[in-house]
Length: 302
Image (cartoon, rainbow, N blue to C red; front, side, top):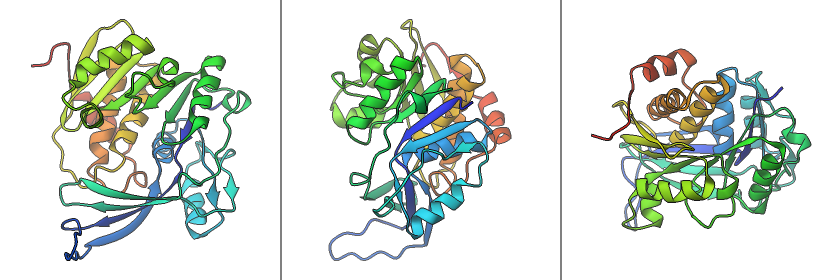
């Protein structure tokens, strides 16, 4: 049985550490250049598999090229990761070049994802799943996946569903959103007020991460709490939201309550930013549990 199906972006990341971003007439000299597991869906699935949670990965096809073969080799190292739905197509494997600054922030160049062949997610391919983790960085196949999950009684965990009129929002059981993204798309909007507006439409849980600031959680009953992240050194913020989602799903798969599951997500995200690359080196269960155990959960933000 696969407790979790992860559906979305599958690819490779080329992480390039630079002292500053290039600009017209300004050349920069990279300090490192490396390749990693990448793509929002792959990052979530690999972390869960590393923690021995049965997980099935689907989304876009990858190419029969050097990057595609490299990616398959990396993914094959995880026995808990079901790759039966990972297709090969006659197009290049999608990838990102990611310029990583000393602060851990990054600029991303995206290649090939929109052009990839997408795998249809049917009821049969959801069989045995309790949760569907879904990213919305695609087309109508994402919405169809959410519809299939709702019809099958599979709970959906959807990232970056911040638009109140997005057709996926009413099909979302747990939304994991970024406060930075909300502030970018809705200038002047308070992310907590925005979470309440989204929750009135979805009727589900709305979680808003905010970098080093407390994570806000609004449950199905409209009750809220916050989890304060630890202070950690930041090497690369790429994939921090994916690690958070994986940690949250790990807790839910164990049957934990929402505060404990969110704390696990916060700890997983915090440990991820201390590593270069989004998905290549997930923190261990022991590391995440040790950090999560010391996090503060409050019902009022001080």
